[in-house]
Length: 487
Image 1 (tube, rainbow, N blue to C red):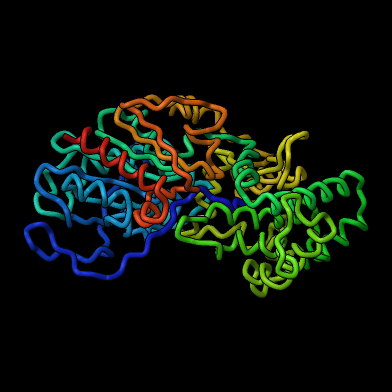
Image 2 (cartoon, rainbow, N blue to C red; image 1 turned 180 degrees about the vertical axis):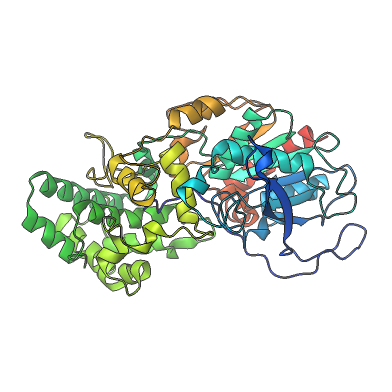
């Protein structure tokens, strides 16, 4: 269920003593601060909740900017690296003598207006409330650094940074609340909500090893063929090859095969050929030490080798000791996965946004297009799961308000001064960004759009620029723009 979530990569930061420019020893990066955030920006009388944030003023000098970011749809523990120059956030802060902040998104991690994630509570999890959180924090937070009560946006430039969903949130905030954030940096920003998001897999198909793509397409075409013929014997035989014979529903089996493709999103330049995606392709394409030709080894070998990879390696990494139906099935609504309303449940909170506002259903393509994912998977496969998880909200298959989101926050039509977009050619989320191949949106000095050879949010990590010259160039251009905009 929504395994290919648009999320930021974490950045490891070794423990070290931090000092300010004047030599003062600073609190550890993992020091947690709390802000009294409004529960409902439309009705302040409903009170406040404690929103967690982290901060570093290692590079800060009077007059420098405040660099604010949120990891978005994740518990923010472990994202302290975005306070440092291991990331673009810290590089900008270091160059401009600024301070960095990471703030946790409402209804994720431990920043919750209520002590549960029921449908009733989650009614306050919307894009607009998230935007208003960022603005209210900037305008009202008394920060823990010296003179931190005197750096509001009316006296100090604030820069909003995000990647993936939080990159979209950066764009949407600057559209919706102009004048609060002086500049923005949006990496792999999924600004366009798309319900039927089959194009998630297009950059994967085009950029993965072509022999691997050929063989995956052959298996998927065979699966769709036997499904169309209702050949139940062939379907069961195919499931058995993958060790998934106990999986009751064919759409759950088709979704299981997607999991190998979702590994692409996690690739980074410093990962090398040992990443799980390439181990998957090697399992299909290396036979007796010989690589398959561009056309692959063909259907019979592709089924056998892909199935073997699932049986010997992949199943255990995904399901541990759980059975196939319990691990990969989506029809048994008695499983606690669907009804767990305890806080700090990223999947549930993110799925609420998906079901209500975004869609982003990663499904099979229309007929006539090459397919590395089965056409058995259509939006209704995910919409049914929305009903499973939120039966109090949905009595029938929901239709997310994607068009309203795009209209309200301008989607790919965004036109905002001092907003820098950075995207990757091989990003599976590319078609939801301003660098969508079908869009041809021009880059301007006021709203630059730059591309690297990276994947998802690659440019946010400093080390990736060391490993890949195209990423380095995107980062350096961004620093030049920030120097000009913050002069």
